Length: 347
Ligand code: HPA
Ligand code: ZN
Image (cartoon, rainbow, N blue to C red; front, top):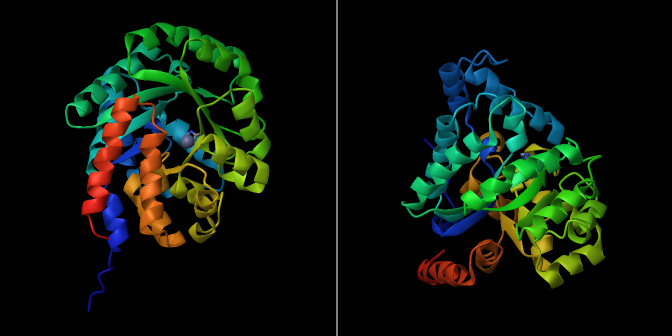
């Protein structure tokens, strides 16, 4: 006798719903198969003998143990076509998950450090996003600074990127990622002030592994529009109240949190508590090739573990559009699309 697992009607309803993804590192969408294909195409030597050996190394104990492998994986990206192929592979997966709008992070310093010009990186990613847009997936691009590198490096990266913000309308903001512990947002106050002066949108990873104090710094010093992860905000009641009152959204990534041991079990995830407190949480994939799932797998895992109900799932989906960097007209159209779907579908 074979036992077929039943998918809960609400998981299915969420999977088919139109949604925005607001926290995805494009380099984290590189599947092992594509890493090996690009390594071969570019004659790059990998430290792993096979796809299976690489995948077997995906047993992370914390953020840094993941980042070491993530940067090694990105070393195969050299040409504009490589960045196109990586981005198009992500777009295919996003379209399959009914993502209608995505806001993508990229890490230029990971590539410029290896001699790949930032223009090559952006041209490849943007060309794929333009092609995906013809198939119903709109997008924005957010340049992330690597926080383990110096402030001077971030400032130089920003200066090099300035002409690209003008040339690529899809590039609308800056973010902050990589090793959080020991690299507080305050280290990047000046480069964020420069970005703000250019009218760019601002986001930062904070409170993934770092303390609530880093979330305060992201809000007060960097003046971010959204906080990436932010799950440790739950440790500070005043901070939770502030996030709820100001509607500064958190881009939560459940499978990432589980794989990087932020929570040791999905049932201990704090997403529902944050939702109950009125915080604008969203659900996202972070680095889907490394953490075992794209956005719909994140919805499935969190709905099941926390036994979310119809209204809670709707709120999370709606938050994804509320917190996105689209125009008010685009936002209204996206929410209307969600509402039409949600009221017509039965869970
Ligand atoms: N945290 C910090 N930096 C990152 C991550 C993350 O989850 N993914 C890729 N860079
Ligand atoms: Zn992230």
